[in-house]
Length: 120
Image 1 (tube, rainbow, N blue to C red):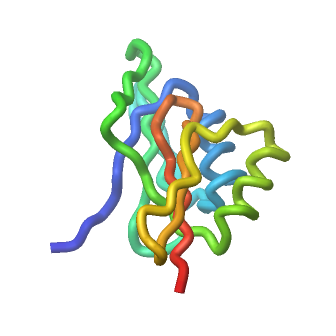
Image 2 (tube, rainbow, N blue to C red; image 1 turned 180 degrees about the vertical axis):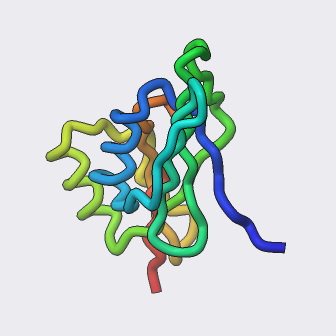
């Protein structure tokens, strides 16, 4: 079995596209409308992120117990980049062992996004 994508319902598709393109660095793969729903698939490789906006739905509630993780070259460089973009650090940095360091921000919908540095 192969993991295909993770779907995130979003409040504002343009704002979410901007975050995942400009901050996370994902490319827009394809985008389409199906009735009141607009869908955008993002990703650079095999696994995709699906952003789904339903214009008939109420506010999206992300909850607190899920996050998306993205590997970065350097936690310090990513934190500096986010500071330049005006994006607040939600928590961290955290280093639970000598081999990994990470921190969290919130995407435009309140979803926790984790940036992880693997230390060798």
